[in-house]
Each structure stands twice: as C-alpha cells, then as structure tokens.
Length: 342
Image (tube, rainbow, N blue to C red; front, side, top):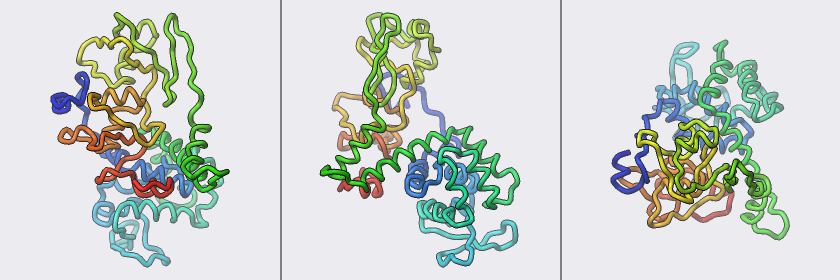
C-alpha cells in the first residue's frame, strides 16, 4: 500500500491490505459468476460459492486445478464431454473436465435443474439453510455433515449478500426482456432499476447534524470545522473503528481530521454502485472516487483490476458493478443482456 501512496492513489495512509485466505480469494474471483448463475437459473449464489469452496478446496484441488471441475460433478451416462479419472467413493471414478472454470459453474447450474433436485426450486432463493439441507437430502453428497458445512461457510463469509445481487440482476434481465412501452431496452432497464433499487433520498437530524442518504443508500454527514473521528465517534454514538472502516481510513495514521464538507459515511460502503461506470477526475484519488460513489476502495480496485503498477483506469472510467475483462470491457454476458457494444 506504500507504493500506492507514493503514486498518489491513496489520500491518507491506508493500512496495508492483509493477504486473502484461500476461500476469500475464491469468493473474490468467482462471486460475479455465482451471481450471474443465480439470475439465470435461480440457484442461490451463496450456495454456489459455498459448494465451490467445499468441493474444490477453494479452487486448489487437483480436479479444479487441472480439469476446471469446481463442483465434483461425475460423468454420469448423459455426459459426452471431456473426462478425467480420480479416486473418490470408489477408485478411478469418472469426472467431468471443462475447458475453463466458467463452464463448470454453468454445468453445475444445469446439473441442479434435473428432476432429482426440482424440489429445491420451490424454496425461497434467499433461504440458504433450506437449500443446503435440501441438497444433502436429494443426495448431492454422501458426507452426513455436508449441509452444515455449507451453512457454516455461508455464514462465516457472509455469502448470502450475493443472493441479493443475484435477485437484482434477475430483475435487470427480466426488465430487459420485457422491453415495455416505447422505451429502448436500456431505458426500460434503468426505469425498473430506479424504481426497485433507488428509493428517494431522505434526511434526518442527529443533534445539529443533517444525516443524509446517498444515491447508493448509505447514510452520511458532511464534516464541519474542527471535526475529528475521535470526537465524532462520541457525538454520533459510534465506535471509532466503525468510522474508520466505513470510510476506508487507516487507524494507524492517528486521529483523522476530515476536511470541511468531506463526506463521512455512517454505514459501510457498498460493493457495487448504482450505475455501470463513473468518470474519475484527473486530480481525484481512488479513495476520493470511492467516497463520491459509495463503493469501497477494495471493491473498486478489484472490479477495475487496479495494481500499484496500474493505479488508475486508462480511460478514466471506473466500473462500479462488474469486474472488467483484461481488455478493460464489461463482461460479455453483461454487454449482451444490456445491448451494449462496450
């Protein structure tokens, strides 16, 4: 993170981000795919991610690393694709092999659409507990602790947050398909999004402070002369660590004193923004952009593939919803459902 500071990306000393654990890295790499699969097939993203972590050893098992099979799906009689052989319940069993891991996620979704698992789709898509128990009951795995293992992973890593994203994306897809009225698909999509996801801004008073709600649904106040995080934590009845965490500020830098008029979030910033893109100004740091759009620095860095060597987007546009490709474009499936060319 010191490199980032030296290159002028961070406004103030951010703590050096700790390295991710294997499950956390897996979640970072594959949550968008799980969200997409939920929008298309109705399988909770939390369940998909938990199964992927468990079945593939967070993507590090031999079957996942060499054959891109993240869900331990065996060949079965209807499989006519590539195959590999591993010892499992029995020696030298046949497993499916894929050209890439995304194919594995897609095949996993199709696999669960079999009659054997149809009872699962009568459950609420956000009821991960019932889904986990249902998978075990339908015979997905022989381990008697399988359901509890999935539930533990979901709750430990808060994977249920991705179920909300899956439902939001499903609404987007349905709005696009509907093409209601005379509006273009994009206009129809934005109309549904705004009605469903963007409540009117509201404000309330907290002492002499005006607490406002951002377009990304986060409560905030504006800093006044003489404010410090230590004093604000007492005034607002918040823990100091909350203010520092919500605003992506390193506590090791001492008691932070915000500039007059600076946004101070009273709730955690989001992982996704309201719009697809945001222009970043030439004199603006990633942290400042993060405060402006209400998306965490960590999420912006990941979605835009930023590194100390490439600390700013080349086109001065930040993706707020989806992780861009190595070519700097939105994922192909996002462009397809939205009718976008880039």
